[in-house]
Length: 183
Figure (cartoon, rainbow, N blue to C red):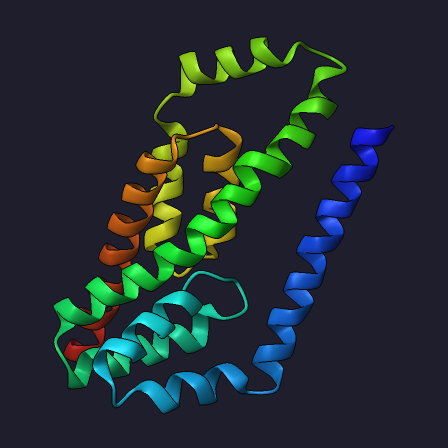
């Protein structure tokens, strides 16, 4: 019962963060923040990259990254944007890996032993979280989904950080290339 309450608390925290993100989008705070940093290639790319990670902030971040890549170096935009995305992704990953996945595992434990589930998952689907998560990270889809998949698999933090940076870099680079092609 205690684990169920903790899981409910975690879901409420996630719900409140989503509500806050919706508030930021609806009040145009994100657009104003990103627009105010567009003239500063480094800061603008980094901040837009931070917003590239969330379901509710991806659209304005994609637009900002595309505009920044049209004016400045696509490579610098992708390098710094991916760094901003990495910072936010890592914070979310640590929450999922160290906190939420333990609660989900406890609920599963009632039917099966935790180690049996983890062992079966690792043995049969070792690279699946990496592949699926990487594709989601590179796309404009919300990173929370990829991070949840990777966090539940108990992926090593160093591997996750490499994966997050690499796939966000690829996604932002593609955004820059598309923006330049449409220009």
